[in-house]
Length: 265
Ligand SMILES: NC(=O)c1ccc[n+]([C@@H]2O[C@H](COP(=O)([O-])OP(=O)(O)OC[C@H]3O[C@@H](n4cnc5c(N)ncnc54)[C@H](O)[C@@H]3O)[C@@H](O)[C@H]2O)c1
Image (cartoon, rainbow, N blue to C red):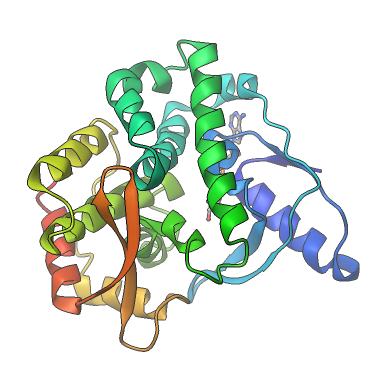
């Protein structure tokens, strides 16, 4: 029984997947991020200095028990990190969820209304569960949509040795870059980009470290297991609530990374 945040869930799940070639296990996620994201979908694994998620296994838990009350002891920074993944869920599949966050973000961060918190967790879980059930092993590509913000986010985490940013904060920075990329590729309108930037701007996060250079980030992205040689496949937004996978020219991605320097640090 894995009781804890995403790190505990990923590690315990990986042990359960490999011990005796797989034993049954249960998840009891205790962070918002683990409740809405990490505990759903059966991906388990451990970090490695060469890159994120290079070592792991698909291994579904028997069930996941989510109790929003445990969030009361969670520090605000961790609550905001969880909200980042909820924003992602809205951006890729559910414009109404995104609009609800626009309306009630601060109250959700403060866990002011337990019923609303429960509703939002339920909606985010439903989105992830639906996408995973359409493509559990990432065969058709639908599951890859969950990686919106993660191509850049994972590179940021690895380039800062997993120490400077929480996973949610890295995804937040990643979503800003990838929304900008969507705009540059003429898939997202300027008005929609503004909406994304405004909502993400209301979630404070540490600035990117000085001296983090774009070449290093590009190298991490090419090392990502989803990259094919020097071709990067990135999730972009075709609108709020609609995501798609596209091959991104390196120059456009570099421009989008460059734009991070001026967006809300
Ligand atoms: N398997 C997946 O599909 C998947 C998806 C997203 C993220 N992840 C992984 O999950 C990890 C991030 O998970 P996380 O954000 O939960 O981080 P975490 O597990 O590091 O937890 C964050 C912090 O909160 C503390 N904590 C946990 N529950 C608490 C509670 N109820 N009250 C007070 N403190 C509490 C933890 O001890 C830790 O210090 C990353 O390694 C990421 O790669 C996995």
